[in-house]
Amino acid sequence: MEKILITGGAGFIGSHVVRLFVKKYPETAIFNLDKLTYAGNLANLTDIEHHPNYHFIKGDIVDEAFVMELFEKHQFDGVIHLAAESHVDRSIANPKEFILTNIIGTVNLLNAARNFWKTDYSGKRFYHISTDEVYGSLGDEGKFLETTPYDPRSPYSASKASSDHLVRAYYHTYGLPALISNCSNNYGPNQFPEKLIPLIINNIKQRKPLPVYGKGLNIRDWLYVEDHARAIDLIFHRGGIGETYNIGGNNERQNIDIVKTLCRIMDEKLGREAGESEQLITYVTDRAGHDFRYAIDAGKLKKELLWTPEVKFDEGFELTVNWYLNNQKWLEEVTSGDYQGYYQRMYLNR
Ligand code: NAD
Ligand code: DAU
Image (tube, rainbow, N blue to C red):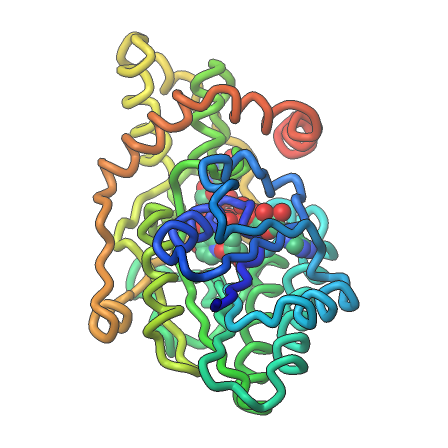
């Protein structure tokens, strides 16, 4: 039986990838390795936890001996590496955790794959999931291509850029069969409410101030998380070894438009007066080194692997808001405890 290791499978994107693989490939054993940090949550996977081809392993990719032993024990045929510290604001407050997990953790996985697969790479694949933030910040024009030079500007994006370089170095130096994709901003169910969209949904619900950094004019390119998961499936199975693919939904929006759209949708759904939630918008001190604009050219993925996003932006927004309104218990659990301290540190007197 083929065995695939998915790291970070209890997180936001990882849980959607694990679900897709467990359901679509019942003859493949799917191992989800996750440390269950604040961002990892097994409640994201309750619907598939009893599937016979699904296995959960709690563990830390920074622990080298543990990672080596895991490879020895399970003899994985492929790796899809999503585990990471993923939030830019946390990386500004505490960069070191990002260096450990995103760089050292990736190297541990690369070494284990190399060591275990030796030079018999037939049928093996190491797929590293990365971000468009490695390319830096755009002005009003242009889009990121796979050939755009790296220019990371936050501790988070610098750690992801570093891990991308290491993955490519292992491909070129040792012939490790590696692939990389760089995706734009994801949104959808199960996203931890430190990120813009779920944070604003939660705050609107609770009639709390809606913190917009700077003037709200920064632009992100949004993709529904299940479209990202489908792209990952395609690239893992059909992508060229040594290749990089950009993934994006061609949905550029200013942050303030995202926030106002959420206000409008939620006022309707919650039976509030039109315009009520917009009054909660509060402009706060900008993020340090805030990248102005990201935009992805996903032409290579579309042309070579025939990928197209299936979920239109309005539809994805509706699905997302409905999910958070219908999963009150999930939201309450992740916003209790440590989240309260995080929120105070990040937003009080900002
Ligand atoms: P997330 O923060 O929601 O989840 C990360 C997961 O990794 C969690 O389950 C966490 O417990 C696990 N993890 C963290 N440190 C670990 C460690 N040391 N050992 C084992 N597991 C550990 O992140 P996400 O938004 O789902 O992002 C997943 C991946 O996709 C990341 O590599 C991120 O850089 C990349 N990415 C994210 C986006 C986005 O918009 N969210 C866009 C492009 C790329
Ligand atoms: O582009 C891909 C990246 O997208 C991923 O690699 C990261 O893991 C992911 O976190 C995301 O990074 P961003 O920094 O773009 O996402 P975030 O949701 O934190 O912020 C989106 C925009 O909204 C950004 O311009 C900052 C702004 N913002 C964010 C928060 C949390 C606010 O104005 N207010 C907020 O409270």
